[in-house]
Amino acid sequence: MRIGIVVDSPCDLPESYLQAHNISILPTTVRMGSAMLADYRNPEAALQFLQTHLAERGWEAESSPFAVEQIRELFLGKLVIDYDFVFCLTITKTRSQIFDNAQQASFAILNEYKEPRAAAGNNSPFALRVIDTQNLFAAQGVMAVEAVRLRDAGEGTPKIRARLENLALHTQGFLIPRDLNYMRERTRIRGDRSVSFLAAKLGTAFDIKPILHCNRGETGPVGKVKNFDNAAQKLFDHATSRIEKRELMTPTMCVSYGGVLEELRELPGYAQLRQACVVNNIELFETVMSLTSMVNIGKGGLALGYAAETGKIEL
Image (tube, rainbow, N blue to C red; front, side, top):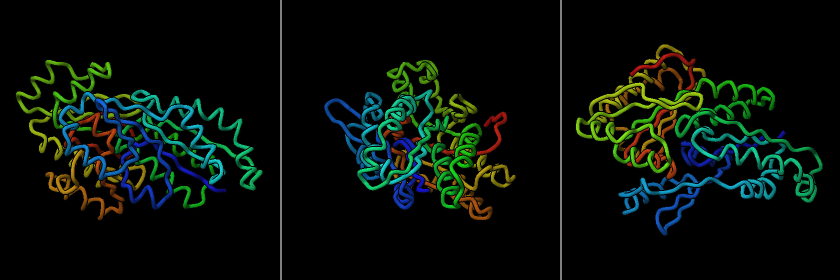
């Protein structure tokens, strides 16, 4: 059986990995004033965005997911022909409409796939499963990598589905914004009150950076650390500790950064995390954030994800 994997553009994995494993992208559209950019997870485009004046008021940007009809067209025009079963992994539905749009599109796709498949000389059934990763950005990548690993190992779709749905419950995502004022303006535009005006002003005045944690679609602070570099080290030390204690459920660690990767690699604690991954046979995926991720977190933001049993996390 030919199994396809689809992710949305906020899923922070290296472009080379996505291409090597034929992972399809559901793009989002980022609009800033009169400028409109399609986010297909292109690092060069994301970095160019950083270097333009758009980045200075990026909190005003609007991101919109593929509409139901666009998802339907993508599947009927290509995916139902190339594959027999497709797993579509989306950002948490608590933060985006992508899951709901994909789920709605799936009904039409399953009713209409026979004609395009028959035209391609294939009369066998087609099926798909839309899965809410219940996480975002770098943490989404953990499930995509596991889907690839299971597919390449020859596992059947029922086992892959069960594994991914269980993994969604235990994927731990972390975010550290560099600019709290940016984050506050961004959340205000989205109607999200998670970063108040007072918290942003006090955090900026005293250089306090929150470490945000996402699990099962819920996001909240698990630590507040003075200075971004110190917050990054605290997060990297936490991830390194979980690796060394052999607590990860998959041999995967995903990290994304809102800037050039040379800056990421110079952050304190990151070299130790990389070494721990090597020693313990954990595959480390590092990438420039997607344009969508960067618009939501801000320039210089950091995201990290892994899968492990959910427990109380304090940093």
